[in-house]
Image (cartoon, rainbow, N blue to C red; front, side, top):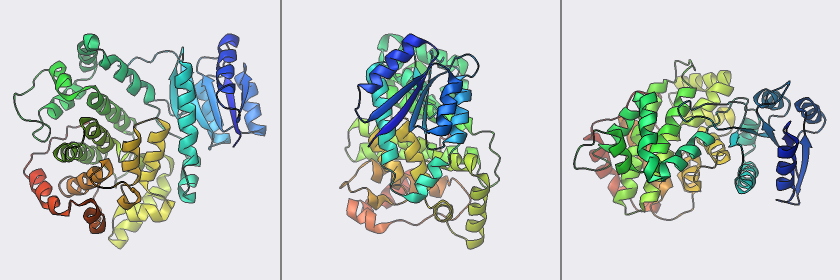
Length: 402
C-alpha cells in the first residue's frame, strides 16, 4: 500500500537527510520535502498526506501552527512534530501532534515511529472507531517526555538526581511515588520516606508510568463536565493499576508484565477524556442516555460512537509506541474475550482489577457493568475473584489527589 509522507523543515540539510532516510525505509513510501511551511500547507489542500513530519521552529508558520491547520484540512493525517529537547520539568503537551520527535533524531527511531503509526492506523477495522479517530482535533502528545525520562532513569548514576529534580518541581509527584512504594498491595517491609529510595524500590518503568499518567490527567484538568469528575477517574485508575500489578505478581507473571499492567491501569480511562475534549455534545448525550436508561455509561458510549472509549485509548497509545501488551489489554477491556491469549495475561489482570476497583472507587456515578463469567471461566480464575475482592476491600485506598 502506497503512503504519502510530507517532511517540512526550513534547514535544507536536515530536510535532505530526513527525506533520504524515509525514502530508503520503504519503497511504498512516497516522500516529499518542503522548506516552506506555506507550500506544504498548499500541498495538503490538493493532496492530503498519510503522515506529516514537521520541524517546530520555522519562519512564518511554526510546526505546531502548521499541524493545527493540517488537522483541520485532513484529520486522518498522522502528525509528528520535530524540535529540540523539551525539559522534563515542563512536561510540555502539544495537542497539534500525535508524536513528538527530538532533534537531532535517530534514523532508526524515526523509521520505527512512522511504521508503528501506520500499523496502528491499519489495524482499525471498526468503521465507528475509524470515524472517531479521523475526527479527533485535539490529542495530547507525550512520548518524548515519557521516553526521555526512561532514558535518564536507566542510568543508575543519574537516576537520583533526575528524581530529585522532578520532586523539586512537583511535590505532588513525590507524594504519589511514596504512596506507591509503601503500598501493601505492592510490597511489605521497611517504610520508604525518600523519593530517591522509592524509585529504587519501584523501578524506572513504574516511575515513568506515574509521570505519564499525571501529565495526561493534568492536560484535561480544564474540562468541565458534571458527569465526569477528573479526580474520581484518577482515583479509579490509580487503584486499578495497583491491583492489576498485584494480580500479575500473585499469578507468577514476570515483573515486566506487572509493570506493564500497572501502566495500563493508570491510563486505561484516557479514551473518555479524548472523547469529551473532541466531541463534548455527543459525550454529554451519551451520559444523558445512560442516566435515563439506568445503564452503564460504556454501553451508551458504544451506541453513540460505534466504538468504545477503551478502543480510542488503545489507538492513541499505540501511536505513542507504548508496550503492545498494555495496548491490547486496554483495547479489549470492554470485551475481554477478543484477546485470544490463554490463561492469566495483562488483559485478564486489567479486566479483573478494573471491575474490582469500580466497586470501591467507581470512575463515575453510572451503573457498573457485571462480570463476564464466561471470560473468567476461560481464564480459570473465577474462584479467585472473591479472594481478590476481599483483599482489596480491606486495603485502604491510596489514590493521591492529582
